Amino acid sequence: MSETIVFKVGTSTLIHETGRLNLQRMEELVEVISDVMNRGNRVALVTSGAIGVGVGKLGLSSRPRDTAGKQAAATVGQCELMFMYDKMFSQYDHKVGQLLITKNDIADPRRHQNLVNAFEKLFDYGAIPIINENDAVAVEEIVFGDNDSLSAEVAIVINADRLIMLTETDGLYDSNPFKNPEAKRISCVERIDDKVCACAGESTSSFGTGGMITKIHAAKRATEAGIETYVIGGSRPKDVYKLLEGEDVGTYFKAVK
Ligand code: GLU
Image 1 (cartoon, rainbow, N blue to C red):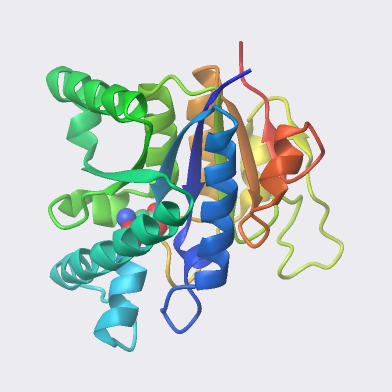
Image 2 (cartoon, protein in one colour):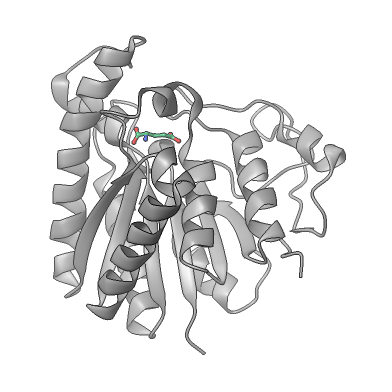
């Protein structure tokens, strides 16, 4: 049965510590997503990485702290990111469309409707919508926003069946797996409560803005809208096949029906 699936990929999955693109990772991700589309599913991709890639491309020694610096890096990085997605998806005969959106595009009813229409048309044309925040103008989004919540909003806008977030760890653990070798992966979360949030800690990488807690908040928002949500390891995009077969990979957050 064909489904509507939103993928979300984070900065730390897409780029090396040098700030340059992880081409092997990106290739694998694009191949898997293309194959999921070839099976007849409608797919949207929410991608981070604009600021991170911009930092690498501009040769900056670290991520700028000031807003103008982040904006400038995002504009440069977004071009590079889309250029690579366009090139890679073309290899599999898929077309991409870029949507740079802000919170207002979701909150304002008229803009929201325009967004729905644009998505619908892109799906009709068989193209894959690739979404990021419009970092160059959405100043408050750079400071407060994160693409995990954006991916949940996109999933709701397009009435998705599933939201799959690819990240640094291969799911939610009962304690920080980078610090505690005994940490255990949680396969399935029936209900997102304070205990689940406590497992998330405050993990962040040097390139992205999220962490596990923003994924849990996104999962809460999406599951409450009836969307099955998953957090899986970004280093193994092929786990998506297992997930779609119902195998136990990452963490599955059950939709609240
Ligand atoms: N929009 C930001 C970027 O593309 C990323 C936000 C996030 O990491 O969640 O760099």
